[in-house]
Length: 197
Image (cartoon, rainbow, N blue to C red):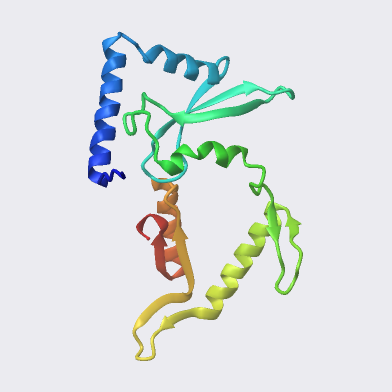
């Protein structure tokens, strides 16, 4: 004889069972709080906590960066989590914010400027000054080649459609202000921000 149970009845029964088990624990006076505190303490025991801010968006959720002295005498990050004292996030982080630790300790993270020339198969390591000069050179070249002072009917335009500016949501107000002034000064029309996309 086979017994069939609907999904709704299964969930109702499962919920009732879990509730009964939880009530049983509470009824016996079992306090799960100290075990949780001990586990958290063991993970960051001996570490120094530095308050910081999540770099992923403009919300500014507070974080605590836990470090210990490494074998080389330098601070090494061992954990990053939400800061309960933050008035913005009160210790919570979104999925991206929860992964900040991986941003810092990822062995695949690029830490040097790499350039691959058109048609080349290999990446070449450049120093930062050379890379910045190249970006400035190409920006000026593109602007000079695509700048329109007046439209065909003689109206003043002073713009370039050959450059697009895309800002990131991690930029602060001061950086955004300076970037806007620079882009508009160059005559860039297409200005957008990652936070709106």
